[in-house]
Length: 343
Image (cartoon, rainbow, N blue to C red; front, side):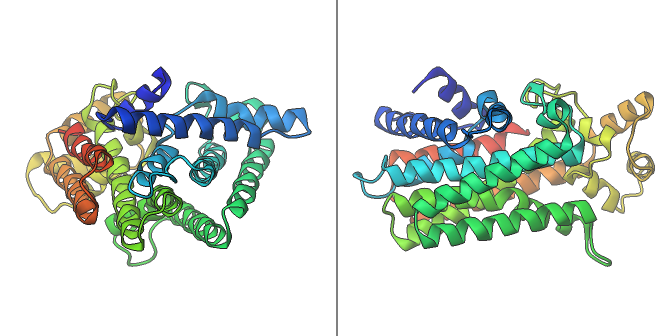
């Protein structure tokens, strides 16, 4: 496996201890990369340049990696098939398209260490390029047949509903924590689930195996995003690559914050923490440092860790119907990574 791919694997906690598995997944990812570059090409040089902006920036490629891993449970002759590679490109193009749109909505100046498309070319072009990538993903999905098109369309619908729910906030009377988890199910879990489903389908897995891998992947995806919430608070910044407490400063209501706000604890630290968090984004440096310190010692952070571990355990349980092969050990390693990275 190439150095870049190994780094991507390590960044999501994936251990590929079996040489044959490592070689197969690496081959799939190399072919996916070639399809991505070919797919974003346009007769308009500006469209090509803007569409390749995030492709060239790299990234974890977690979704095509899960496509490749899920395919390992099926027919050995199908594991590195053209259909598996196309499926990997479909999910990555869909993911990249959402990043263009997210950066516009968040007014983000940087993405993957480079100027974001919206900061470089403006919001209008960034949105249109995101639309172009969605269209390229749909075009590739059509090569895989009607069922794949339906899955991709359903996944896109869930993504949009998740984004709308996040933007609009909880409905009247809706629990804020349940709303947040529902957003993650739709906005994050849906595409990761589709990735494993595609890999299993086109790798020749049985229907039960397809469903098990899709369930695993959705649950793992939620756990991975939740663990990022905790790292933003608990780490020194080396894990997340951003300044600790960034979400807190920007007023992003992540799980530990939601647990703290919902707490009825009457000890002085919990009361003071709710007082600071209730005011909205914590932009004052002194208050930010105080809130971060209180959160790190809070019952809310412990509760959030238990929630992450619960999702990791649920993901692992979904693997129980799968054969005991190196790919299953690799997926098990993801569950271990998620459970351990926030302790």
